[in-house]
Length: 165
Image (cartoon, rainbow, N blue to C red; front, side, top):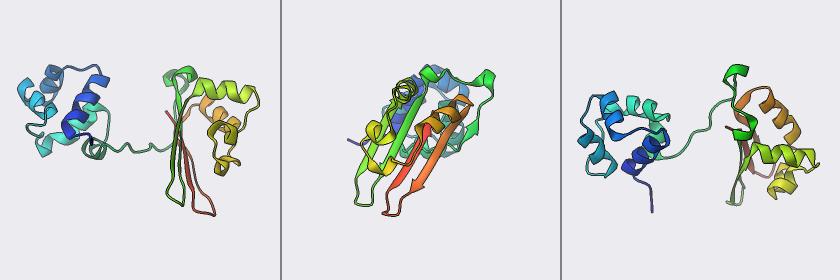
């Protein structure tokens, strides 16, 4: 079943620990309007979408489509960095023959695997990733890099993205 706009609004609101009243107040609408959005009885006015998306911490496109965009790489200052134990490594492989592989690993697990001497294909099961050095990615994360760290298209058409959040 496809996720509706209302369900996305509700899910994102709850992830931010906001109440319907909070959203209503921030957007200068009634709590009943927010409830109707979340129950797919009505949709937010188009002029409210950018502000609603910002409040919910997504882009307008992400809010409307449900597809999460990968953030560009950014270097987070030391005082704003998350503990590596609370970060996630996402590996996405779209193979030329149509297979899609999605791996989400806690960075703490990646760190332990690297300490044990494991390599990327052992971790992901995809030979396409054999030339990607997870130790280098781990070091980038320790230095504060987050976002879409690696994007590679192999000669046989596989596309690999490595993202840290």
